[in-house]
Image 1 (cartoon, rainbow, N blue to C red):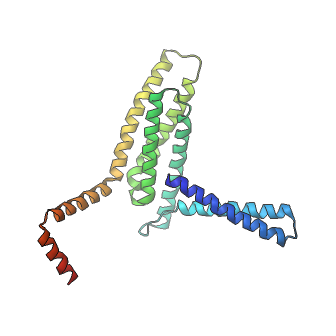
Image 2 (cartoon, rainbow, N blue to C red; image 1 turned 180 degrees about the horizontal axis):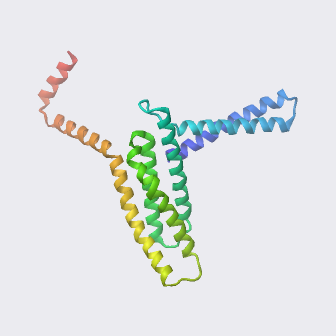
Image 3 (tube, rainbow, N blue to C red; image 1 turned 45 degrees about the vertical axis):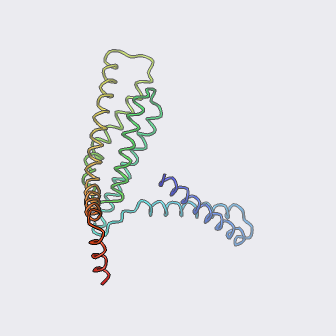
Length: 216
């Protein structure tokens, strides 16, 4: 949802900048419509590309520029694979398989977003992005291609069933990777809840005394 709103905002801003540029160019070029339209379209495209790159920028002061560029490139590749998976999902006939692919797709998306927010977690997601994700997308696309064929034999049936079983294992692997990425956030939440519990368990008078001491 957040990404959709950011996309809408990006197109809104770029469209308005393009429109303003076109109007200014229209009067600057003495009513040459084609040049005005071309200038507005160019301004809109450049603005959209610039804003999209800023959205995908890795913010991590403790990482080198080369590391940020590498992580950004790998995340862009992972997002391309994720989009291929989503497109293939739309062609699946089985509701069960559609749910499995949807669950895997959602988990991969959460992994990508988690790494975008915490770039140092990339090392935990890297093996999955480089190996399992690529193989998963290829397998799903081949599966979709074969289930739409009008003929099947025993070997094809076995290959389809094996792909379905492997998809279950892929979902489990993706979930484990996501849990590893979120482990620090989970630990931080556990610490905060424990501190809050200890604070609430203290007598009211003792809490007031601590607040008074902190004010002093």
